[in-house]
Amino acid sequence: MKATRQRFDAVLFLGPAVVLMLAFFVAPIVVNILVAFSDMNQTVRFEEFPTTKQFNKLGKLDPEAFLGIELRGSFYRALALTASFVLLTLFIFNVSFALILAVTTTAVPERMGAVFRAIWLLPRMSPSVVYALLWLWVVDSAERGLLNQVWLLFASEPLNLRLDHPMAVIVVANGLIGASLGMIIFTSAIRSIPEHLFNAARVDGAGPLSIVRHVILPALRWPISYITIYQALALLVSFEYIFLIMGPARSTMTMAMLSYTKTLAPGIGGGQYAYGASIALILIVVGIAVALLMWRLINMKSLLQRPRIEVN
Image (cartoon, rainbow, N blue to C red):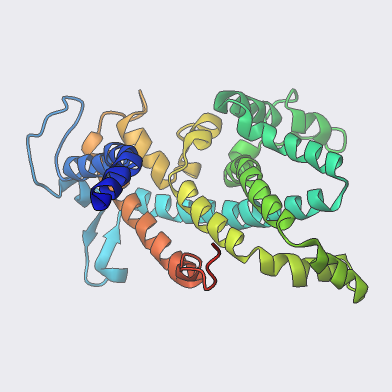
């Protein structure tokens, strides 16, 4: 009777989560795999299945090439842009800048820190289109652009960042939003550090930088690890702000953007569902590889192990 009750409770509490995971995570992956090995287009029909025709558009086998595969130029460029976008946004903003914000806002008086954190949360809480429109106004190449209004006070020629530095625009635009999540996680972790550790460090003569290095950073090992893995995977599939700010520009055509433009973007190549699914499948494989690699390097397994001390 007790065992039956335990199984019923397990089904009751885990059942909805399992159903949602199967419906919205596993099923789309299975469908994507099937579509990737077909020739589906706007007719939404399979005329050839299975076929590797879509993957042949991305590259071909070549014994003399690196890893035995010669990639198509546009796909190779998308891979390189994706790597640059993820690494720059992740380490400059989502981790480093978020850590600076968390340390700074917890070092000032509580009310001031709360106001400052609320300001940094505004981009994340704003609708995507509104945030993108603000960025388009900021980086507008005409004199009416916010940045150019300041720049022309000291220079004679306006800036055109979307044309000259497109990667910098999308890195900063995505980074300002990503930093807010890390800021909240790191702030919560810093507040959980026992106060007596800070007092002991001050008694020993430690300055602010020493406290950050020897007290705060060791306590943030696992939050930093979590944010690094989570944000890296999120950035791999991010394309919303890239598309809204830059459009289908080749200079910012990451893998996620390439997949979107080949499938759903109207008027710029949409309708090639099998082609886009093949790109998405490669992106899934890359995401799994990145997750496993970072899991291994960061040693996340030790974070999930059973505690050595059981508290009843």
